[in-house]
Amino acid sequence: IRGDVEFYEQWAIEVESTVGGFFAGDHSSYSWDIKAQFTWRPTEHIGAFVGYRQLAFHLEDGDSPGKFEWDGALAGLFFGAQIRF
Image (cartoon, rainbow, N blue to C red; front, side):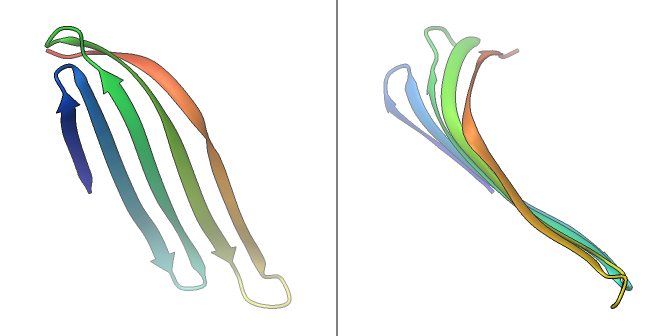
């Protein structure tokens, strides 16, 4: 899912979220990701952005007693440039 709103001439807020998974017998994994960013586009084809991203995931393999299970997350600020064509 993705959405963006231009709120003042060259400025926009963009939000994107993804979810995915894989399940096969006693093996499974899934992740969820959300990203929010502020974008400045001084021209139609060039822009710069800064935002925050959160990724959460779960991995599982096997049955007891050899079961492996891991929950984790990554998060942080990001920035970059855009060239659109």
